[in-house]
Image (cartoon, rainbow, N blue to C red; front, side, top):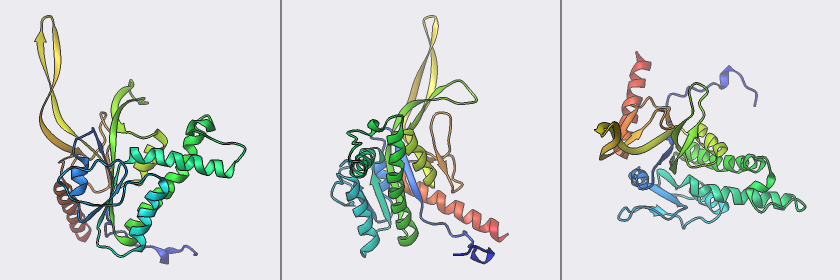
Length: 264
């Protein structure tokens, strides 16, 4: 198709969001995702909260089964509005296994038994083609079928080598750095869920001791800080309660503010 100014579209109507939510184990990521409108779960780690009903595919044990679940949602009639994928770090070994299978099928004389066998990070580069297929499936369900997508992930603390400061530790998504970067670029929101804490200092003998203090309040961070990765494309407040209602309300308010600003 020839590209010209007549092919321009005005992107004023927001599409359903592609969300990545990550945080420590047990913080409530699945409870958050399960409260989204008409959710359906691609189950990878079999860890959905007890007492919260949700329709779910059988636990996927291969990358092919993950894609078959997406294909079923694309081809078959249903009334689901949100796809939940739990979790990205349990999906990653399936992506590695699929990458190894494809290499071994295409190169009988250069078999891999692990993703490291390619050498010098080449195996992880090869996984990005498989990751892109997965993300393409998400795009098709969002763009053509109107599904929002929530992908959960666990957090890990890793050293961050900043070009502007001394290295420091921060929370990151528990994925290989290449896959993590690709997933974050693709997402409309990367949300960090954690308990809200503050630090108090007290004198103990001849020194001051810092202690973390918290009341168990669970929060959702939407903008990056030195301590964690986060982003959003919806002009959200930097901090929200950890609940689907709070996020949906903030998204609606931001959308209405943008509409009023455009009309002015």
